[in-house]
Amino acid sequence: MISGFIGSKNYPTSETISVAGGATNGTDYLMDGGFYNDVFSTVNLPLPFPDLLQEFSVQTNSIPASYGERAGGVVNVVTKSGTNVYHGDLFEFIRNGAVNAVNYFATKVDEQKRNQFGGTFGGPIKHDKLFFFGGWQETILRTAPPTTISFTPTAAELTGDFSAVTTPIIDPTTGQQFPGNQIPTARFSAATLNLLKYIPVGAPVTGEVEYSIPSPSNENQYLGRIDWNQSNRDSIFGRYYYTKNSNPAAFNGDLLLTTEPGVIDTVQALTAGDTFTLSPTALNTLHFTWTYERINRGPAAGVPSAAFLGLNVAPSPGKTHRRSRLLTTSPQCAEHAPSRRSTRELSRLQMISPS
Image 1 (tube, helix red, strand yellow):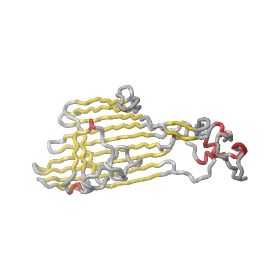
Image 2 (cartoon, rainbow, N blue to C red; image 1 turned 90 degrees about the horizontal axis):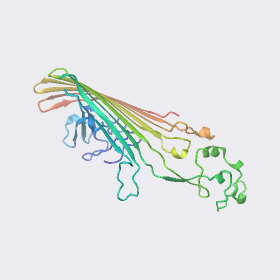
Image 3 (cartoon, rainbow, N blue to C red; image 1 turned 180 degrees about the vertical axis):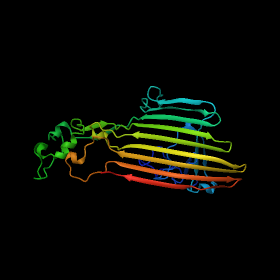
Image 4 (cartoon, rainbow, N blue to C red; image 1 turned 45 degrees about the vertical axis):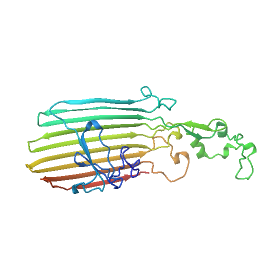
């Protein structure tokens, strides 16, 4: 895997993979026969969790001309379908300090908390004819962020007393040192004083402040699928997949903890397919795919704006929304060994940065 083409404008699980010397975003992804690449940077959209998958394949060379969209490899993913027997599973993966072993070289148990749980269930609606399958997974991640050290004004300095500073502080209007390094509070900037209301007071003398920036993350995945064996020659399926990852920005009155924008990613994918046997040697398939991706980035509610602080500066865009839609149809006809496949795509990418 090679970095590039991915960032906060992509779903967190997107990866860049170079296959056979191709571009890192040159891999073609298909899910249930439908196009499954990010319209913005053509990397992969989020893949379902393993319990939802029937099979997958990776083609790295000698790829048929029918997959001519990308110069790299082709990843094909197929989701599970229901059968004549009801079946399902429940699972949970948990990681926290209560159950983790201490690393041999560590002085304490790591504080990362990960809870991943969900289940699947499928079965017949009408035996031999109509089947259903579905699943859900939630992932809750709480990391132990590293400690950050910053320096902010002390309580004495907020009153104008900088006597603890040994370097002379010069009055810019007279060119002389402030007597005793005492600065009249009337000389303080009103906007600065408003800003300091949202910053913790530093330790005496040094002004040191220690803090950790939280970065909570929650993801939910849902999938539902219906399969219909219309006849011995014709089968139809429909599948809907929804996933959402939330990493919201945090603000509790402390601006030091609000240095990262929140990111909320949502992806939806709908695929319908029909497979019809024309003859013992000829097969025709048709896939219809619709995908929608929305990524919202922005600060937490309540963060003071520049105007609120009393600063006369140009407004910041603040929030960014990215929406992308993709509509594809892929008819394919296979007779004997050769096959013919064509793809029609209609995509739309929209970037919104309201002021």
